[in-house]
Image (cartoon, rainbow, N blue to C red; front, side):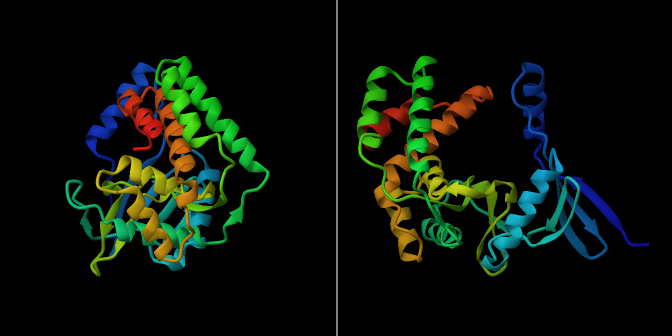
Amino acid sequence: MTSYRKRRLEPFVQRLRRIERLFRGGHVKQQRVYRVHIGERDLKQIVFSDAAQAERTAARLDALADTGLLPRRIARYANELWVDYLEGSALDPAGPAPVQELAALFAAFYVRAPVPIADDAIRLRAEALQQLQLLRDVGVVDAATLRGVEARCLTSPLPALWHGYDYLDARPENFLRDASGRLRILDVESVADGEVIGTGAARAWLRWPGVEREALLRGIAQAGGPDLAPAAAFLELRFAAGWTLRSLLMRKRRLVEPALFRRLAAGS
């Protein structure tokens, strides 16, 4: 009989937070992740809230399989996705940020069948402004900061933008180094398609200490990716507005940072 062992992967603290949000009325993530050891194989089982999400994630893994950056898809059944369990060493959150490796990773995603954004640019600008105005109305952004952000990021015509593949949750705990020393992505759920290219990079330089914006943008271009520098101000504003509003509505108040918008208004 083949041995079968299964263990929940989410940290205990994360599970406690879910219980707390359940009682407080906040957003409760439905996804569950397990490590499953069957015979001589180590697998990762991701249980999504619905089958459509599992199907979309599986399709993204297949499309990006040749990059070698993601675990290999094994199978999908209904709302369950099975992938290889990646072994390796965790990144040290206090260590130097692997900026050039992140740049190469983003470049590999961004060159994969990008689609130029034309008519949708007007909608993207209007959406960002609407989110900012709502953040002003609830007291996260003051009127002076809103004017400063608008002047810096929303008054000029938008530069060239594309839709395509992106990785939207670049932070140390979502990566490891495999036996060859290569950076690999653990969190396959945050791989996106049809996203505004550069959103994941903006998240990285805004939220990962040590990832400097100009160095990351330069590295992406040097690795064969698009030149995102002309769009950087809009990309970081769009991410910051959407991230902050989402965190506020989901009652994740520790992630709401009014100072972030003051820095964006000042261009720092």
